[in-house]
Length: 580
Image (cartoon, rainbow, N blue to C red; front, top):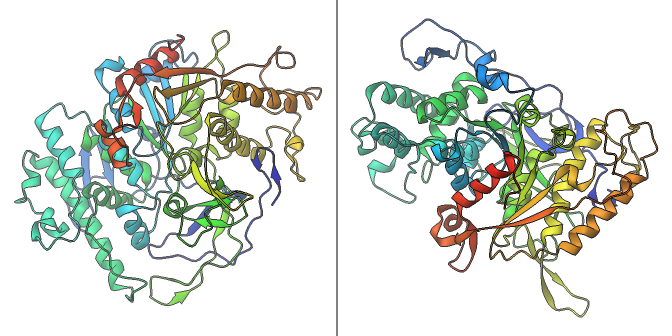
């Protein structure tokens, strides 16, 4: 593995045997940029005429759109926006602003809900979320049924649900409910919860009851069928429902029923009443399991999002994550269980995932890109390392008015951005990433997709196997034009350091400037002027007054963005304003 000044760019791909299916019939893939992923299978909703509900065949009807598990083809209803949206595609600054947000499922939720409110003035917002979450009840679902993780997507969909009517609030309350951990109360198991007599169903009308219950029953049936085909042991226990999210169970039931993540999102959006101007897009279209990986400073590799965010106690404290995309796994994995219960050593195949085509479409038709706050390496970067995403963002321009590309800083450091190291004299020293390091990590991730797609020359990044592109290295401001921080943030912002990083990047880009450059947007001042990132402070509130801050361990003295102020600033930038 070669380490350049700005991160890892050469991938060592694991040599593994043919991939076998695991507990849910889905392959176990390592999210990496070291091998070819190929085309993702697209599948979704189609017409079906039966009106009966049963365990094998379900048809529902929402807004004149019929769904069934009998079909597996993607339709225009999942691919296209309405006619008004399409009419604005050639000039995204005309009409309603369009904002693309790359984030995880928690930290940006308060701002997401504010963006979906009438205050946002009909703003179109595309929320791009990773499918590699493996914590909480999502981990249990993926362990038993396989497939992509749905927890972050479910969380965002629920926060976007307006709750403007009594029934909408009742549906949101039901889908947001979690079964109590370590409880012997019968009202806290799934079988009792899905009973219409349970208090959670109060206020939910008969049509919605039928739809939600049908997919909860389907999920429960899938789990039981999988259990019947598995040999249980201490290392492979039965499905644990305690602490599970009813919304996750409903979502997983819809996904396995249709065999389509987009169809499940479509259904969940309709049931939860998500506003039409908001859209949740999985970063990768797949029905297989994707596993996040990371390479530490000393070359140690970690597999799994939870393990990256929660380092094992035996891991040397001096290590820290350098690149979450670098997930190739050279050693054979520990023994796992297949569906028949026999032990099998499953290889982990490192891949170059292609992004969901809707991600690239959203970028092309947006007038503001937002790199959300939250867990940098496990929530934001997984969607940025995908092939072609960096190229799409770097090339996004709107003529005289540049498209703002905004990095949101956190209010404090988490496990992924602070670490401990032993100094030369043996003392334990706490290290923390500053704003420049955050920028460098995002630029690193976006570079990776450009290298894989062959978009630009990476010969100056220390990569021995560089591509043949004549395009110069994108400038920092091709990726990030603004930094927004909550006033009072713990993260150090050194504008001189940011300037030095931008200057160093310009020097790298100039090394290939003389080549024939047909695909890079014309930048007449690229060789003579360093473009600087604009840094803007935004009003903040105490972390313990924000639900997301509380869940992530925020204390009263720690700050998070005031959601209304953040959205006002982003809308101003999206409409061509200064953001101040």
